[in-house]
Length: 86
Image 1 (cartoon, helix red, strand yellow):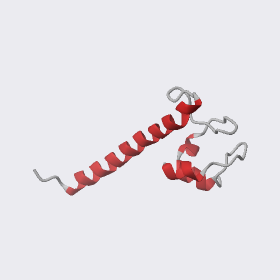
Image 2 (image 1 turned 90 degrees about the vertical axis):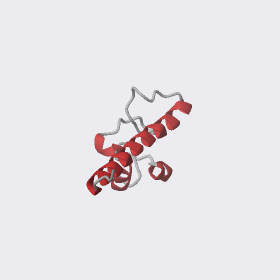
Image 3 (image 1 turned 30 degrees about the vertical axis):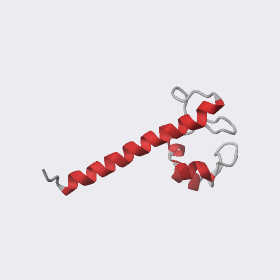
Image 4 (image 1 turned 180 degrees about the vertical axis):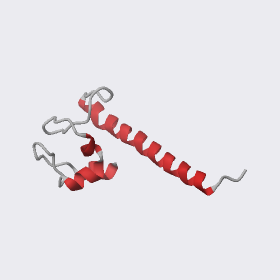
């Protein structure tokens, strides 16, 4: 059975976002488990001051560039490694 091109494109887009979501969750688990932090119930926060991140700050590359690699509240540096992993 030959699939139409539009279906293949939609499948690639769907699989990309599914993979990115799973990988992002695993990255959170890898970051929080050694520190003894809860990774399911708590929201993402600044490791420096603990400020909860807003929805726009949760987009890794965009928020890193817009905020200059710093926390919006306390100004602590956010490592480029975290952005590159995402």
